[in-house]
Image (cartoon, rainbow, N blue to C red):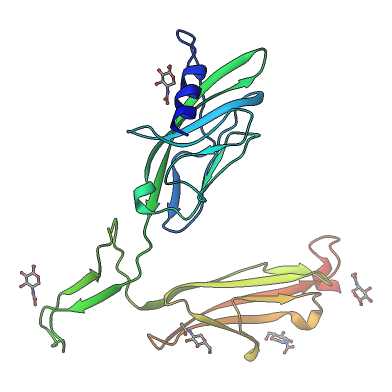
Length: 261
Ligand SMILES: *[C@@H]1O[C@H](CO)[C@@H](O)[C@H](O)[C@H]1NC(C)=O
Ligand SMILES: *[C@@H]1O[C@H](CO)[C@@H](O)[C@H](O)[C@H]1NC(C)=O
Ligand SMILES: *[C@@H]1O[C@H](CO)[C@@H](O)[C@H](O)[C@H]1NC(C)=O
Ligand SMILES: *[C@@H]1O[C@H](CO)[C@@H](O)[C@H](O)[C@H]1NC(C)=O
Ligand SMILES: *[C@@H]1O[C@H](CO)[C@@H](O)[C@H](O)[C@H]1NC(C)=O
């Protein structure tokens, strides 16, 4: 297997001729531990040969020269080479797979054209064990309290975001102020809230729906009136609301129509 790689490198590196430096489809490729990573390239023309190496030690990963792909030691059952494009799939990645992968090969355009390039693979470990630890088990009013965000285990943390239960605030309803008879109308209610709030709709003070959107498939004159959205956060136990006045008009034949119909 090693000999195959050496052979192939000698064949492919046509001394003195400038290879096309190929830009990978995605670079860097970002994966979570356990995911399958796709290192994708699109060489011009029909693929003639390709080889992938893991830098900086140029560890052979996979190579192909119009026969069966040769998989490098340690990559058995984890690598699939697409022999049409030269793209490589690396399955169930681990942290040690992160790094730069270089590739070289050739494809037939006007002649056999060499190409090469590199892709960076970034591998992240999802964080599972997070704890917020207060400095005092029982916080005391008007006394300082420190909260520490602890990540248990050896996981690397790149950023932390602190959130506090809050809202709902800035409740607003989007949707039309008026619409012609028989048309479809959707009102959407939104609010700033943590955790996300629940919404209840009222029409002329009668409860009509419980969702962020309220849809009327075909409006009639009886749908004219006042629409209220109440946002409710059960954690902060706070409510906040917004009101929209809505009018159903006759067929659109001018601004006077709604007064005469
Ligand atoms: C591609 O090959 C050229 C010429 O051999 C070399 O200068 C360049 O660094 C190579 N690019 C990559 C990304 O390996
Ligand atoms: C909170 O942390 C700061 C900085 O580490 C420290 O000076 C302070 O004493 C701590 N306060 C409490 C209540 O633990
Ligand atoms: C609205 O729909 C009703 C019943 O489907 C129909 O009789 C009426 O002609 C429609 N009006 C308009 C303006 O499209
Ligand atoms: C809703 O309220 C509006 C304004 O007060 C009124 O014009 C309309 O008739 C009411 N509609 C219903 C169905 O109660
Ligand atoms: C929304 O309503 C559901 C069901 O009534 C409830 O379990 C949930 O806690 C509510 N969420 C908020 C943020 O109020």
